Length: 235
Ligand code: NAD
Ligand code: ZN
Image 1 (spheres, protein in one colour):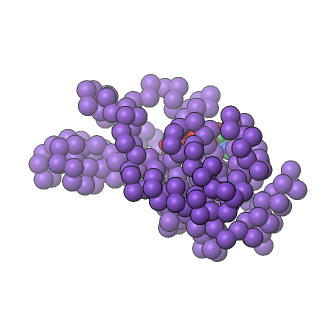
Image 2: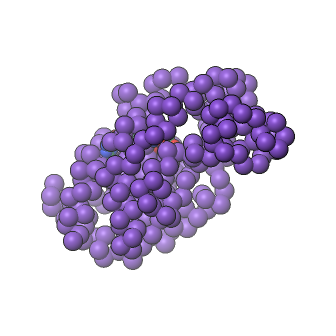
């Protein structure tokens, strides 16, 4: 309701440190399907597994190439843009994202912690050196050792980047307001991050989530629409 949006706006204005945690739901309005909704990517044969990368490289490659071809040119939507604006206005201290699409940076957010990596960078499976993402999608070998490349996304079976996870926990611990946008909060450890804050927790999401009772405020609907309204209450 509009009362709840106004309430969130006043919390944002009063917060000393607001941290935002985003999931696939913030990018659906940019045309990228999420994971677990009806038409989500999970429903198609999801190949984001370390075992598939290692044992069925061609299948893994085909899956990535297909996704990159479909969604590589996606543009940020109003929700990403408002996060960048709120960072400029010193309301947002960090955006922690589970997404691999790079849309927060495209919208202008600077302090983005990519928990699950990004489809816009790659590295060599043999020597570990970084490589242009383009080389992976064009199936060019590592320029140092000729090894096969992989995108720098965290696959099921991969470790999360330790430093980014640590910093994410720190941000949440220090935050007095955590805003979760577009996540089912099922994937661990990302789903636990908000609850390391002793401050207020707010969820903006289309569907209900299992952890809904752990929030101080729930706003159901389109992230872009809700955030536009909240932003108007801030001015
Ligand atoms: P999820 O698919 O499990 O949940 C997405 C949630 O967003 C759902 O609960 C849905 O109700 C909600 N949602 C969908 N559209 C919305 C909208 N317009 N406004 C508000 N809410 C909306 O996603 P998750 O929790 O992020 O977990 C999925 C995993 O898959 C993540 O780890 C992520 O790395 C990966 N993934 C990333 C992308 C991407 O980079 N864009 C896309 C799909 C999956
Ligand atoms: Zn190499």
